[in-house]
Image 1 (cartoon, rainbow over the protein chains, first blue to last red):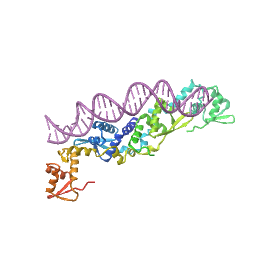
Image 2: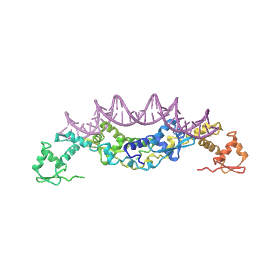
Image 3: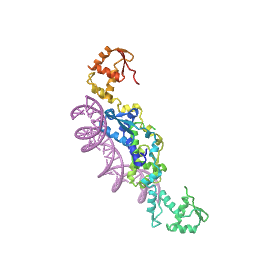
Length: 189
Length: 189
DNA sequence: TATCTAATTTGACAATCCTCTAATCACAAT
DNA sequence: ATTGTGATTAGAGGATTGTCAAATTAGATA
C-alpha cells in the first residue's frame, strides 16, 4: 500500500474520518457489511448523502465495495486502522523539508539583521539574539585560540560595538575565555 | 481524559488532523516546541492563519501552550497519538444506538410490507424476503411440533398464498420438516 | 510609564463541505 | 424489451473552513 505516503493523502484520510456520520458508518460496517439503502435508513439520511459519504470513505481507502444482487455492498477495510495516529501523523524529515523550510525563521531573522554582511543592530529578543550570535560564532575556527585583539578585530567586521558582541558571545556560551585567550565553544550537536 | 468519549469529539479530533498545514505543524513540534511566529515563517503562512490552526489543534487537545518571554510556545501532546485509529473510530454499541438506530432498515421493510398485520406481497429481493420471513417465523413456538394443517392455518393469517410462504420458510432454513411434521429452527444467535 | 512585540480577534472573501431534490444510470427480474 | 430497484450524478442552498489584512490585546522591555 503506497497510499498514505504523502502529506495530502494522510490529511485526506483524517478528513474522511472527520465527520460523525462517517464514523457511524464505519462502526456499522464493523459489525457486518452493509448496503447503501440500509445505511441511509439507519442514519436517517438521504441515499444521495450516504452515497456522497461512502465515496469519501472509499477514496480514502477505508471501505471497499462489491455487487450483490440488487445491492452495492460496502465493507470495512480494517488494516489501515491498526496503525497508530502517531504513525499516520509522522512524516519523514525529508518530506517536511520539501513542503516547508524549517530554517525559514532563522533565515528571516538573519536577513533582517544583516545588511551587506554587517549587523545593523543587536536584537533585544533572546531567540533572535541567539540566532545572530550563532551566526557570528561560526566565523571562529573551532580549536584555534584567539588573542583578545584578534577577537575584537574579527567582531568589528560585523558591528562597531565589538565589546557588547564579545560579552554576549561569552554569555551565550558560544565563546569561552581564560585570561585574555578566547576560543570557540564546541558545537552542541 | 474523558475527552474523545463521544462521537462528535472524535470526529473533531480527526477533523483537526485533516489539514496538511496542521500535520506539518505537529511534525515540526515533534522535534521541539515552537512559537507562532516561527511556524508562520516556516510554513509561509500568515501569523493569523497559524493562530487559527493552532487554536484548532489546542481545542482538539493535540497541543498545549505556555508563555516564554515574548512568545507563546506550543508543544505536542503526544499521548493521544499513541492510540490506534481503530480505537478512536470504534464506538461502544450503546452509543451507536443513541446516535442511530441499527434496526431502522428492518423496521422500514416490515412497515412497508405488512399492512394491518397482513403481508401485502412477498418481496422478490433476498434481503427483504429474509426480513419478512424471519418475522413470520417468530410466530412459531420454538420446540413445538406442528402438523402441516396447523402451519397452513397460521400462515393464512399473513397471506392467502400460504403454500409459497411455507416453501420459502423451509428454503431459508427458518422452518424444518420431516414428513408432515414441521418445527421452528433454532435461532442462529 | 511608555514602548515594543507577538498573539489573537475581526471582518471579508473564496473554497470546500453537507445535505437535499431531481434526473440519470446500471443492472436484475420478469 | 420492459419494468423495477438501488446507486450515482448534477445542481443548488446553506454552513463551515482557510486565508489574509487590519485592528486589537496581552504582556515584556526599557
